[in-house]
Image 1: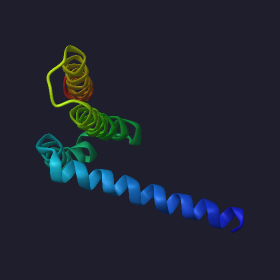
Image 2: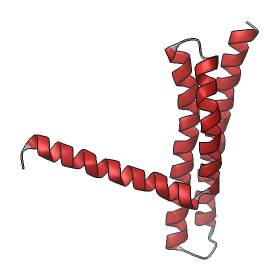
Image 3: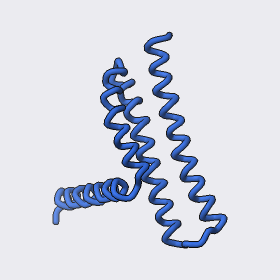
Image 4: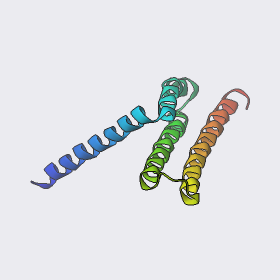
Length: 123
């Protein structure tokens, strides 16, 4: 197998694994489904609200960040649940920190969106 075939093979496999991860998040995580539904509203809103490619990218990227962090949090929770079904302080701390990461990503998104709205209409 030559180098181009290996690269193609790796890209195809990586895409399959990534799509499987998105499917797993969709089927198992209510929060991800909610965030996806919001994305269907926010992405068109970003095109309407953003006056440049950069601003649109910030608006859309900030929400995609929330979805990325949600997937990582869900993966962390799945691993913790696989390792132990009992409550331990470390397991609880890991889950709480994952949840905190999701919350912080949402705060970033709110700041970006409000910043763009304020910049567009009030300043």
